[in-house]
Length: 141
Image (tube, rainbow, N blue to C red; front, side, top):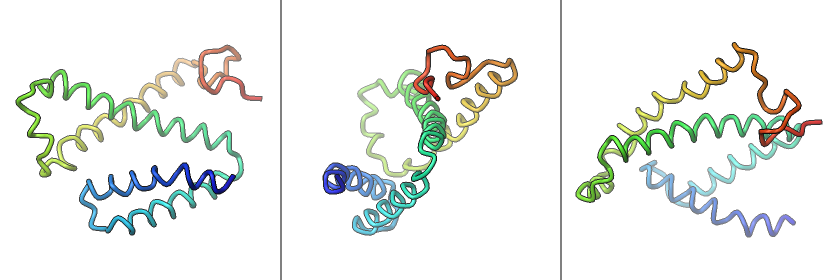
């Protein structure tokens, strides 16, 4: 089992190392791989006990980060003019690696938390607490 996990995850680690280099973090690819492996090991130790609760936290954090990212991408494409083929060269401009897009994403981070707060304020059940279906985590025992 351990060998198959290693064989399946080496591409994830390698892809992560290339992503780190794309962000112009001053590390070699080998250093990035070691850092990602150490981080993954630390997360696996953290998740060793209480897996279901920690997976729920992971899903919440994923929702908090993916929703704003998707919002930025969609708005940039439809409102920001990225659909224009003449702007493709801008995608290769390294001066924008962590500036405008990161600021837009960070500005949108409070949105999912605001939705959760609104649900809590109105007493709506979340994560299947109402006993009905409708969510990925509705079958808690």
